[in-house]
Amino acid sequence: METAIIIESLPKFLDGTIVTLEITVLSVILGFILSVPLSIMRVSKNPFIKTPVFCFNFYFRGTPLLVQIFLIYYGSGQFQSFLTDVGLWHFFREAYFCAVLSLTLNTAAYTSEIFRGGIEGVPVGEIEAARACGMSGPLLYRRIIMPAALRIAWPAYTNEVVFLLQASSLVSIITLMDITGVARVVSARSFAFYELFLTAAGIYLVLVYGLIFVFKRVEKRITAHLNPNLLIS
Amino acid sequence: MFTLQGYGPLLLKGAKLTIIVGAGAMIIAILLGLAAALCKLSRFKVAAMLAEVYTTVIRGIPELVLILLVYYGAPTLIQDFAAFMGKEVYVEIKPMAAGILTIGFIYGAFATEVFRGAFLAVPKGQIEAAHACGMGPILTFRRILLPQMWRFAIPGLGNVWMVLIKATALVSVIQLPELMRNTDLAARNIHKPFTCYFAASLLYLAITILSLVFQQWAEKKANRGVRRES
Image 1 (tube, rainbow over the protein chains, first blue to last red):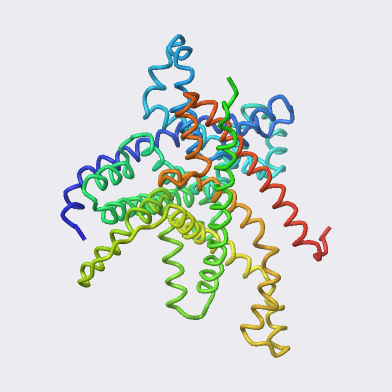
Image 2: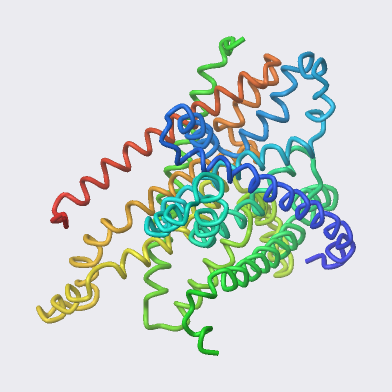
């Protein structure tokens, strides 16, 4: 066991942790922003609105994330001249941009299916009451349906964010130096394979269970009105 | 544009290996999951705790890190340990074995939760009735619990399989010639990365669709003796 190498590479691991967190947080926020309209379109009765979202979700949930990352990062090279013409090649050349884009699209697909379940789980009586009060369309969604759906979907959403944090390790394959990337590069140089991968595993464990702790706290807060014990105290 | 220039068979060959790796890993995951679920439900505190640690730790670490840990880390760990004991050994794990074992080991943790729920879903009265008929714990498990819990386990196992088969794409990083790796080769040779990876994604999608159909069939079959509540 080469503890010296672990200690020596800790600053690098810290940088890697920042990259992992950055990519995860960016994709979670962008994915959330995308998935709210997607989930509303997904529950639409109009097949021309519903079907494209269904196909998008089916494709991104039915294929491995690694394929999606390669499709965007390497695949964009096939359209280099076109992308240069529209001025987007600058972005697709960057591994960082491709990583965030593919993780965002992937999580948007999963999250919008989770939110769809939440929207369908909102009690019909609440929607009827809102309509009786004169709310409709965007106001109904903003005030009644989405807040209730988010509460229902929160535990499943927690899982999705945890998966995304772990899935962000794949960006090391397209040369980004996240936690996994640091472990791979340093171990290839020093041959201290298990020491470094165990260190990486330890960091991920802390991040994952820290994240779960925070999300559980939020869950308690947003469902406080449903918890009889809290009402008494 | 959408021609694979003769690399189609290579992709199909990769898809075959993907399914083999997936099936092998699934078998390991089911066996591990059954064992760990029984440990979690057993009266022996130590066994229950070990199973708890297994599921907690595995579910907190990315698959990719675990695959790299087993493929690169395990041989050096064994060598270091042997050197510590004063012996010189050379260990190498084949990519195929590392892939199947690691993915099976990871998804065993997810299968554990599925089986635990399924065992708990079998009505308690059935077990009491079995005891009343004079069956011991092993006989009760074999004759009453095991046949009945599959009905509750199939939807969850189906989900585990869907995630597992997609996770096999990760073993391409340890040079196993499965679908992803072969697609990589094809993309490099014909300089059409988008076409190749898109074709690969459609193959994965086909596997997913077939799995969905199979799962529906299996659920129907497992529920054939159950009275529908209406």
